[in-house]
Length: 362
Length: 264
Image: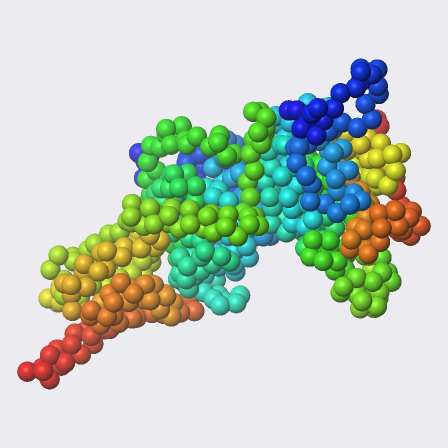
């Protein structure tokens, strides 16, 4: 483990990328992720990799396609409008099953929007985003330490499942400074054999082809079924989450990333006032902690979903609660971050409502 | 690899004969999907001959485009990646940047390279990526059924310019090779055709030079434009299409070197 250092989230992620053995980085400047690009432009070429500023996000994601096809650890990073531009390429990467790491430091949208933090790209991240049936593995860090940690995890999962992995951060996580430590990570020990499919040159007489084109419908369905089987395996094996004070909770907040950070504080305030509130924080947005939501819905009398959007993960929570108990939502948009007190006020309103409902049944 | 089409054919004079046609080792022994008379198959063969003669198959990576040659990887027995429409040179850049020791080429049509991928084409050349671009310019979108291309000549009728390309509506045919040649990152830019054996030999020479420059790694992009035909899309016989090339197309897209490396 390295010494503790004070770093911006974007820089910590970039440093971790170098330590995780990134051989190629291809990106385009956009606020609030440009520090990532700047850090790698200074350091990556001297530390075993190749940095390239592309002419657009469209070019960048296709450079990632090509470089990932060579079996190397490669990545890109961007922010919301740039991530939209990358969707076509990501769909190709998902179908061709090329492992790579993507980073979206989300800002407020839609449109050119604002450069302030947001979680408005949840749907785009977990529901595909581009054309066709595919999924990214989506990791949601809640601070600078996880901005770094999820790089190693992301590359490992990408290599293991031959699938693109997305770190879904936001402008605040990218910009804020916190203490961070980098783990001892042996790149060689984490290197996966890719010689079966990487297009490094035809030495056997039989060539290898990386493609997402299967013109025969039966073959295309076969590829789709294979992808879906992989996503089911990921759902079974790779769910990661954090529980805070849920053992005796009668109300649970579900929140990810920065919203979870704020919600954690709200839980502490509520607990100090005797309210039995807990927090479920998904670290993986796909695979989503479906079972944990289902289990908690047998325990609590209501859920609150907190997001920096109009209610996107809300739909996934509702799906797995399946109407057993009420699911309320509190969100801010346009680059605003909810405060702990706003969340506490919402929680108190929910308790009042439930109590009055119970009173009316007496 | 044996050529099944030659099996059972015996000739007592075979050893004394000159070989006039031989499938290169790296051209897979499968039926090509290209229309009769189309230039793609000729260029495929030349490309594989060059790769075999230079002995670089074990370190060559090809990038297939979207367009008629989208299935190039079904014929070319080199490791290949299929790129999104227009993005072949970006994909090639990614390949070359993480593996500079590989020989990388893209094989692209005019819609791919000079319309949807213009940005990637210009910036890849401008960066001087040490790659080879084989550009098949047949002035039409063949795969999608004969629509107007960026390179379609003025007045030519296509399914999206039914009264002929009108510059007021569609602008001018794009001479992208000349545009690219002015960039410092372009090392070698040439324009050839495959309408006769003489031109086929010239094209092979150009493709060989393009790969040799990349192997030597002296300059930047080596770019070979082959002005080709599309008998089906042009609604002509192969012979008529070659005549059209000679009479009309070469006038607008003149054959020959556009930029050659400084001999010093």
